Image (cartoon, rainbow, N blue to C red; front, side, top):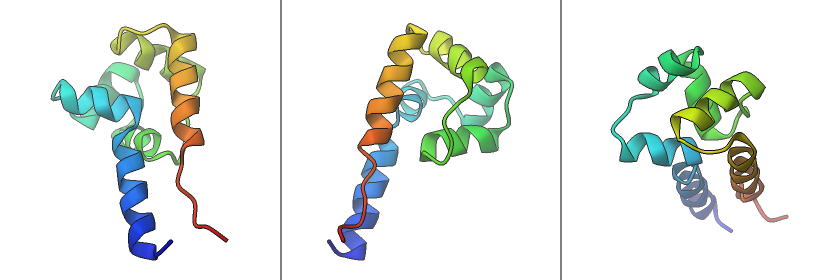
Length: 89
């Protein structure tokens, strides 16, 4: 896989983040979600980019915001994380 292909796959993967999909669909900013969840906008960016996974408290608030059961939200997040593109050896 070329670097360009990997970059495109990573961008597509990030766009598939459950929180990001909801946020874009509902026209919320990362700052608006951060205010509701009680974290920084940088934390929301880190969640959406896959650099960090929300802790229990923020995940519960994100699930409530998205009107999802927290256990289902955790499973959805795990499925998304497991699809992270990687450079082939």
